[in-house]
Image 1 (cartoon, rainbow, N blue to C red):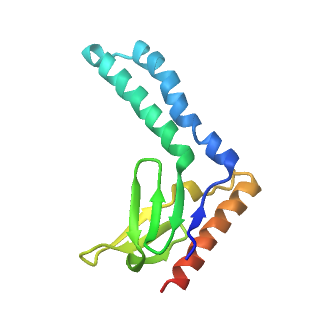
Image 2: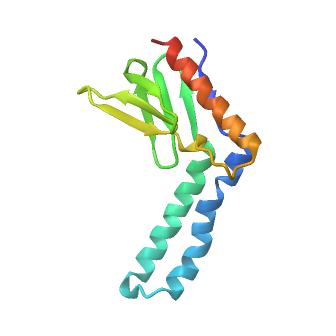
Image 3: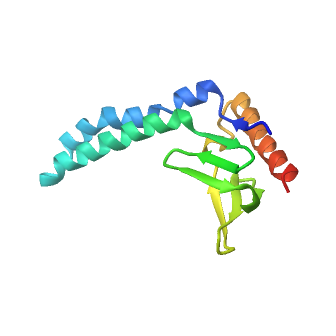
Length: 141
C-alpha cells in the first residue's frame, strides 16, 4: 500500500516560516523596550528559541497516511494515530480518533485551515487535501 502525503502548497509552506522568523527578529526589540527586569534575557532567549522552533517546524507540516495509520506533523508536535483509532475527519478540519481508553480525541489540521480572506487557490488546495484524507479514512474501515 502506497503512503498518501498531504501537504500545503509550496508557497504556503515557505510563507509559514514568517511567524517564527518574525518572532526571532522582534524578540530583541520587544525585550529591549519591555519592562522585564531580571527576566529580560530569559524572555529574549525563550522568544528566539520558540521562533526558531516554529520556523523549522512550519514548512514540514503535513499529514501522511500509510498502512500504520495517520501521522500528523503539526507546528508544535507530531502525532501518530493508529489506523483503527481514526473515527472521522471533521470540517474544522481535524482528525477525530479514539485513544486506548475509548475516549474520543481530536487532532487539528492547522496546515489546512481556510479563511474567506485567503486566495482561492489556497482554499481549493486545502479543501482537496482534506477530501483526500476523508477518502483514505473511509477506504480503510
